Amino acid sequence: MNNKTKKAAKIISNAIKVTTLVAAGASVAACRMYVDVETLVQVPAPKQSDQINFGENGNLSATVQGNFTDNDWQDVLVNIEAALMAGLGQWANPFNLAFAKERDLHIILVETTRFGKYHTSVGGDIIYINSAILNDADALEEAVIAATRRIGGNPNFPDIVKVTPSVREAVRMANGHA
Image (cartoon, rainbow, N blue to C red):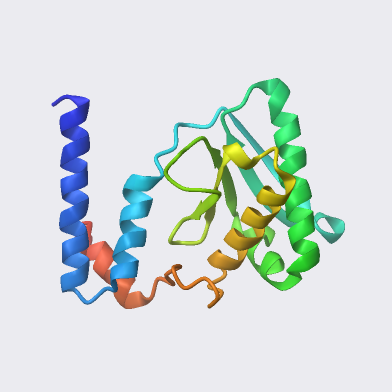
């Protein structure tokens, strides 16, 4: 099977899973997010990975990953940390919850045209940031704040789906797990 055939098979498989989810009573939004995780964000293995500790006494953290040259990587980390600190100053409560060290939140920087500034995983443990905005401090800050509020289930971001046990079970069944 060549790569195009494998990709087509995966897309068909995902469509079947979404149909199963809808039949099991999952919301269309849950299905859309499920497909997003499977097909929208396909990230190559990152070359760099570092943990950023921030907040008072370094009590908050995020693992930042991306594919950059060694020379650019330090600038990327500085930009992400500045956006995190700015967000913490404006939205302390969601940031304290999202970036608690035991949560192990990841920020993955990707070069993509599939989404604008950011995308989040359904489980709320990954924030994908479009690397095209890394040198725009305002756009990066806006993306970090919006993504953090989104993974916290803020009702002002209705397209995020909190995975309820019934949806979680539907996803498990669609994936062939009992």
